[in-house]
Length: 367
Image 1 (cartoon, rainbow, N blue to C red):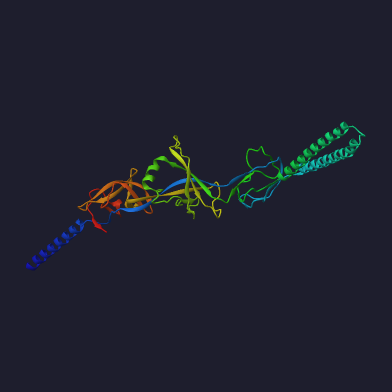
Image 2: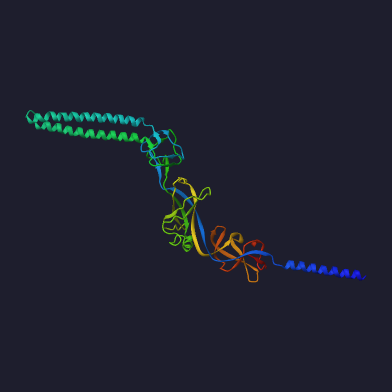
């Protein structure tokens, strides 16, 4: 009986110790990774959709009318200056050249005959055989013949030039855009649309609209100040339509200078070099303007969560309890948010597991 009593006492003692250990384990605050905030310098990229336009876009239009007999190039092809692009049927123009040439030759013969008459009559006047009046008449005929010859020569040259216009060549080197006509099409100078366009191999302009409400923040960030962007420095990035970053940086060249009151935006232009003709005129991209924020606070994006369109983060108090705070961000820098309000230097934040916390939860901070 005594042994049984001692055994029961031992079992009760062990059970008490076990329960106490479990209670202590439950009461131990869970560990969460935290970070104490300090100021730093961050770069935020403001992104804007842009239309890319070649510096030299030349419209190809015919100077004479006629039916196309040949298209010597393909859409998207690179052409050199002077290369044949289109050929207009030149039969009529060749006939006009031949006719004008014949007219010029006839006029030259008439001039020569008139000159011969003057030369023949001049000595006869000197000898008094014929009157001065008759010679002056022949001289007048010579002047008329010379004028007719000049007119015929001009007509011949004009016909020859128009014949040359039937061969439409590239005025500059570049890439051809869409060809708007086909063989057999009737074309002419009065056509509303060009036959095609050529995008030259010069710089490329990125045109985009800039919201006026972003002007002040970017000024505060001093993205274009002498300290962070010396005059003339190219520091603006470009994402191409396929998401790849363009290999050359651009610089702001001009703006419209007037804010559109209907949209609240201003038109800006960034110039990018295009030495390898990688960018085609008319394509789209995303302009990335860097804004430098000295002395700012950054927090990891994965340390935050969104609630009702507000960005939240948990701050650790002195007693290791957490409080949810709303923060305002200027943008992203890598994987971090650049915070403009809601946090200050020295605050300790939870950087992992924020979705499992609620206001007042006590944690064990872990660096």
